[in-house]
Length: 202
Image 1 (cartoon, rainbow, N blue to C red):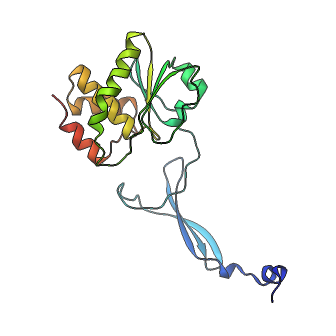
Image 2 (cartoon, rainbow, N blue to C red; image 1 turned 30 degrees about the vertical axis):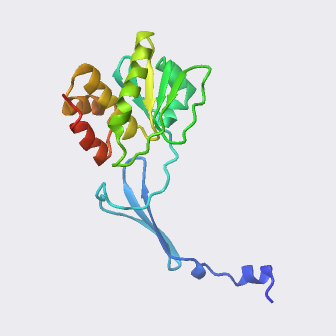
Image 3 (cartoon, helix red, strand yellow; image 1 turned 90 degrees about the horizontal axis):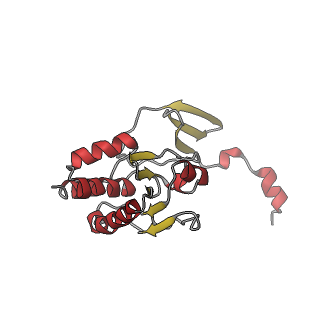
């Protein structure tokens, strides 16, 4: 029977499973890191289709960009919603959390409303717009500033803000989408939300 020390001594890197890891750098370069065959290296790869089913390495950098859609209506990721300095800088008084499983860390500082929405194309996003709109309206009546966020601030929360502009200001989907995209360039409702909102407008 081998001892643990014998197993460790007899271990070779050749026993490791060969693997490739797709990495996107902060500058947007997409690299394929190869490990195995006794060597390590990396090579740049072509830009992949956005809808391609690719693995990814978790991006640990914080997304604190806040899109000011209206003076009273902001759009951001959970990172911004969890950063007290960002909230203070933007004078946030109300937070609309439409993420799933994301906490509300500053109940003494902000008024929270949580609606756990799944970022799936077949989720009926329009079913939530009335409740979300009422929360924004109540905050606005008190001269408050509402930060709307999900996890990434890209699909669910962006869709809610687009829907709010369509409901309250009578904008078409294209008009509302363009204004939200200008405020937060990463805005990208999933295909199902996109279709639902297109059919929601005046």
